[in-house]
Length: 288
Image (cartoon, rainbow, N blue to C red; front, side, top):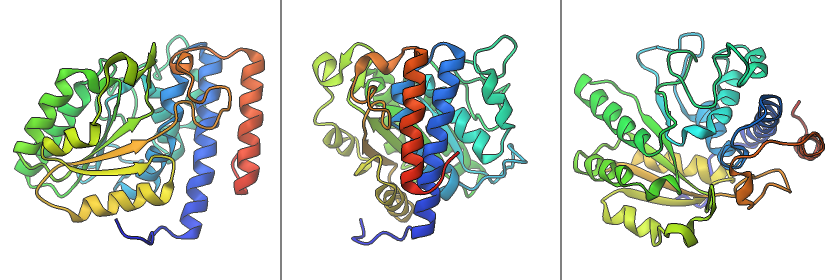
């Protein structure tokens, strides 16, 4: 990648402010909803913020616009993160977030493409999203559409065989408009990925599957932006951006704790999380 990022100072500040707001939405939803998956939501905030507020071609007022780029959240248990991003981007009113997991809500624990504007595919059963994203990219090629498909997969999810079957097919088809982030937060529901079923050497595996592979700090906006720029300039192979992240990023008592893969917040924990996010907002000069 280039040694100097093309991400401007003002763009960086806006993304940092967005990240704090998105994290607040996630915490609010999980507390009011009574359950959810905070760890894997918080580890991918910077990735989705960059995609939706810097990179992707979108028309929130026209969710099915034919020329839009598309995003597939394969790790569908991180639905609150995508809901927060879509609401901030204007796909639906922010007030919907207050209904997360309530009776009659559109915002269920896992994604439903038929109920939520901006959700491209219903996900929740792990490992299926990459196959869908590859199919989308192939269909776009056949239809002659000039757009990209982005996907987010998890490292625990990558223990499943369907991920690697899709990886083989996408490389064979040279789907170079397919850009996949792998959120390597190193934890899954019951412990460390390395101890349960190690994926290492992970980057080398994807390279052996003939993907264009980039490794980044998944919380560094400059590195995320530059990896996307490089992927857009590289043809002939699908792209895997291996993002090294922290489970529960931004909330001290959640970081690198596997029990926060899926856990409800107590009232005290909720207020502590909001206090920490208020401090983060003050540090970057914004957020609400």
